[in-house]
Amino acid sequence: MAGLPLSGAQDPFERACAQAALGCDAGLVAYNLGADTLRAALVLAPEVPLRAAMAMLPTCGVGFQNALGALAPPEVAVHLEWGGAIRVNGASCGRLRAAASSADPEAVPDWLVIGLEVSWMPPDPEAPGATPDATGLIAEGCAELDPGHLLESWARHTLVWINRIEDVDASGRAALHTDWRALAHGLGEEIVQPWRGEALSGTFLGVDEDFGMLLRQGTETRLLPLTGLLEENT
Image 1 (cartoon, rainbow, N blue to C red):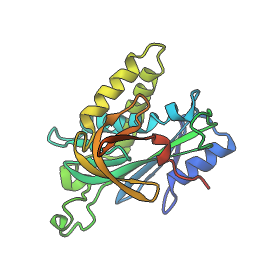
Image 2 (image 1 turned 90 degrees about the horizontal axis):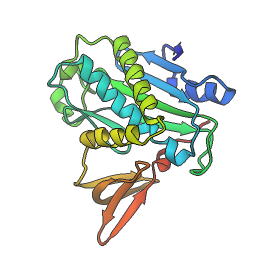
Image 3 (image 1 turned 90 degrees about the vertical axis):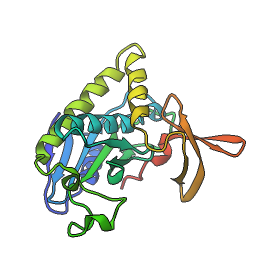
Image 4 (image 1 turned 180 degrees about the vertical axis):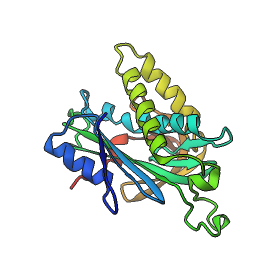
């Protein structure tokens, strides 16, 4: 993987999308190691339709859990929301996001970018208890963690998962489903899921083979495809 370091207010996600649109090689990692937030974005070149390629969103989430699990104290727990939010010890601590060259679920996109944002500091460092649902890694026992090492570990673990799920058999994808389900926040519970300007309430039953959310609302079960989480690229 090639690295593209950024600084100041530069957004790695926006830069990665721009580079991908210009035709950069897959594997580019743009990153900005700020004092308060680690931000990074990975450029991918899928060879499958977008509906299947969007599995890279949970793949990068599991890769992040593996990375932090290898570097952080054992009591630090990571869980993943279906919509991309990252929770550390139960509180929001970052997010994953995605953009692609096309929003057509059945088309193979020219490129797909997955962005990662992780907070180092809680919203109010002087009074971390004032925001119990939002935290930062430093507040969760990771003060000794080096941002660069975490970034490298995330890229490495994510690449391992990408290679596994691209194997000719289905074992890698099945393993990803198993590991992701173990980390999924709210699975089997009543949730409120933001969806295309709405707030959908229901029971989070699980996901389909392409990680689309199965949301039971009354007597009906609704499928929310991961492609609905794509951000517009500018």
